Image (cartoon, rainbow, N blue to C red; front, top):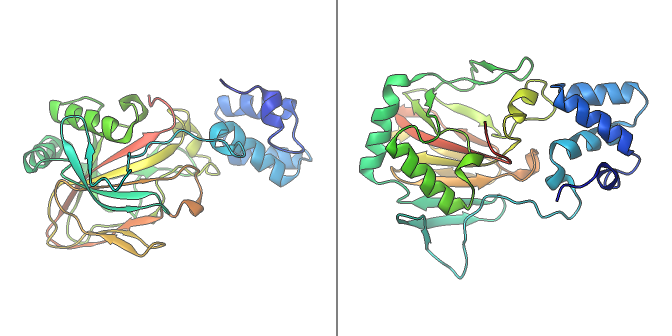
Length: 286
């Protein structure tokens, strides 16, 4: 059951229900978290209270002390090496708790990998990222791949994969963005980044209204790369080499660097890399 503003204000010492009501109204009107915090500090509120109040309204489940936030995850128990994905069993190759990361095998068959590439290829264009200041999308020099998005359920291949992911991660299809397919040609890369939207960036407000924050990522490898193209987690010194049909899952309950999910797509040195990415949201994505 949603908490009242009185209950929420008790989680931010020094705040009031009226303050949270104002923050809630301003967020709904499309104002960025950074702008709201600046206004609150200018009005005399302490900066820690301004930030905590804004974070609480953006992520009430995650911000509550001791709260158990519902999160996508895999049922790894009793040393199980295979997981039920609905229409198949997927193998577990590696798992970590910090960061929460699992490497899977046989999520897709070779035929499904090839079919997904074939369906995506005609729509490929230079990849874009969220514009941090203005919102919308922009070409980012840190990301030099080509990409495209499928609508949810757009093709039988996409529909089958989305159902498999939902079953495996215990997360409804509706709480995921459309599947993105990316192609990295020789020299292409994605420099270290986080997948969540930084609440402090003015451009994050519009995307956060479409389903809340991103909370997890599933990167699916669609081909073998001759040289390079690994997924690299610098904080864990973990490097995953692309193999078709394999996938890496990682999650981040809060949009903060302590999630240890900073990652990069290493430059492709020979050949090309094809991946599909599924980002999962807090709420239904529209």
